[in-house]
Image (tube, rainbow, N blue to C red):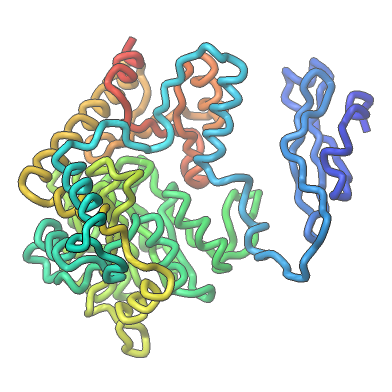
Length: 469
């Protein structure tokens, strides 16, 4: 081992058996006599290669496993070991915190994690407050509600988002958010199903599949998990995959308007997708969490496409429409027309999953959701969406003026900026170091995102005027 590595604090990994290999670092670091050290940590009977960096010739501990006082006889979920590093957004938060330690007086501009920032209009919070206060009275108290959601809210969702599309209130399952429903759908499908995802795509689709055991091991050479069909979406194909070269899978995760690219599928493209699913006997899980940001005349729902109720589930959320990222409220539509290969209704099984794993969304949150769908609430939602879209326009104009290729933005609260030939994480680090602006590295959304960064529109206006300057 190189001399500078003799200072490696072995106590950091006292519960691991450690071996190492070295690899020449970048030319700049090579001049400094620094090597990349790769530690092989033997943990839970598996070998995991972990890059370790030297700082001033001394290795830094990242985490210290707990000292084991007692061990049960229960093994962990082996699929958890397949996951690569941390979930994307906690990793961004970790790097942001490290930056603040380095520059404690810096004003961080957070444009990475897609969390809303503007206050919820009083019309909606008043509805939730009234419902909460009513809980302190005999007349207004309520305990468990229907697991599927309260009927007035389900009816309002059907009327507002699916009018004349053949979706009824009992096709709708109210939840604590689309992200939670994605995992419940994975439980519904089971570990023996194969999946396809847009590449790049929202990480929850892939990570939940890995945890469920639907995938093989991570293949570092191609930066993909085995047994997942990655449908490459690039500027060259208009961010819509070439379905003629896409292998058949049981489940197809598809998000439009898309996170992270900000692109939106046209009616013709979604017609192709529905036909592809029918031809292959697949089920589409359609994520429409950003549909209200649509400016073009593209479908807001997959159920606008004829035949989609035979092959599709749709999940959506109040998070980015109403600022409910903390309130937690969403829904999933499972049409009665959707059946398994044996003819059994998918909705009946999803109802069982919901009743088993969930006691229903908060009744207080549902009161807020119902207020959102009343005329004054809808007006307020469109107001805050337009505010975020103005932020998006500032981002697009700024990066266009600097000569970058910029995508998305028109139909989504995300802008997708291309940095050809550069690592996404390197671009992320450079922007953070020089401007204190937090973005999202495109590679965190899949191999197709390498060379891009995502910039979100969720932020106070002064953050975006700062970017302009």
